[in-house]
Length: 55
Image (cartoon, rainbow, N blue to C red; front, side):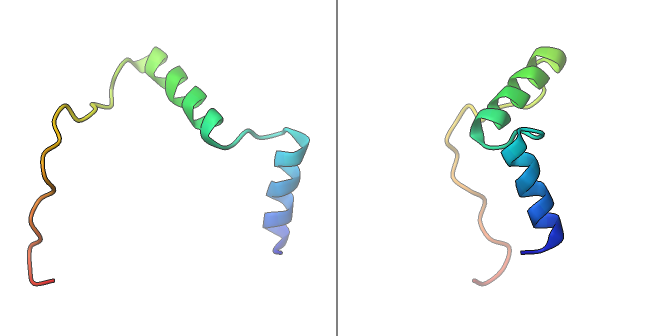
């Protein structure tokens, strides 16, 4: 394990940083509250665009 990995894992264990799905949802909610719905969500289920060249 690299020193950076050990440092970050230690920060998570000590509660110095918050990560994971709950943190992402809280951050997104806070940003949406502050800036509004700046990120449009798809309203249709359109098919993906065709590839440009041979696959």
